[in-house]
Length: 71
Image 1 (tube, one colour):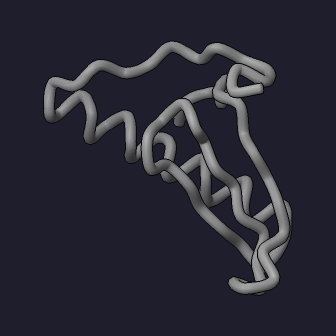
Image 2 (image 1 turned 180 degrees about the vertical axis):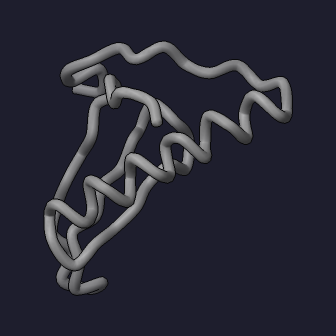
């Protein structure tokens, strides 16, 4: 499993009744969980799957840019 270096946006979604984690640097990469900790654990798995799929498809993997790159 990779070490997370991508910026994570974490928020509570009343609509989903769950914590949502988005990784804006990896298009479409997000996860959720009933707890904050579960959401983080789930997004770690999704990040790994995102990167594995990108490698299989020969797509470029963005380098982490860090804090508030979208501000």
